[in-house]
Length: 212
Ligand code: ADP
Ligand code: MG
Image 1 (cartoon, helix red, strand yellow):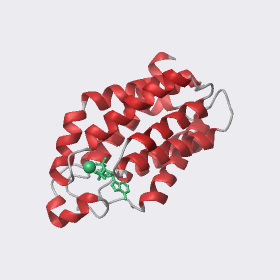
Image 2 (cartoon, helix red, strand yellow):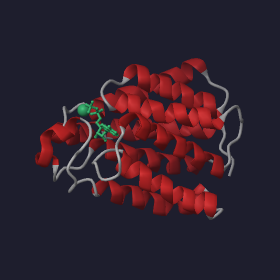
Image 3 (cartoon, protein in one colour):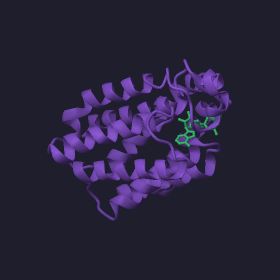
């Protein structure tokens, strides 16, 4: 499939809708092991991103992603703003000036986003962060799409199930990074808010395929 700027705009609208609908849920998850602002942060960032997209009408996939990244970097405080902002900026850089992106290029851009998140936050899998969803999902996509020559649409059912499973797998983990790590063992037994918004991110990538 070819991914145009319309695909990425549709993705952002869907991601923003999920973040708005899950604002209270994400905030409750963050209240249990953090400071209770993740839902508020992400909803504000997504709304700012949509506003800037409609104000500036960027012309390529890369420009759409850069606009989103800059909006998140400038409007979302805490850990998640810079982490998600970096992810979108890295994707934007990876896509260059192309008008149309193919499946392999999309996966390579997601891999760069993961590297950006890990470079900034220094989290590894198992430390109860968004990396616990991002890394296994990117590994899966590389295997299926880059090595296996499949398209995203062929693997979306599996991808969403995998993201959900990895999100839930953060419940028994002890947080080693971010604010939740201050709780030590008391962070065990709660689902990580950033892993939860990351599940919504990947679900939105798949749901945005619907309009093509
Ligand atoms: P803050 O913790 O500053 O209040 P948010 O509440 O918006 O920021 O986001 C918290 C989420 O950020 C966590 O649930 C976790 O998934 C993610 N996070 C925190 N620190 C890191 C890190 N070093 N690397 C990756 N993700 C992190
Ligand atoms: Mg927080």
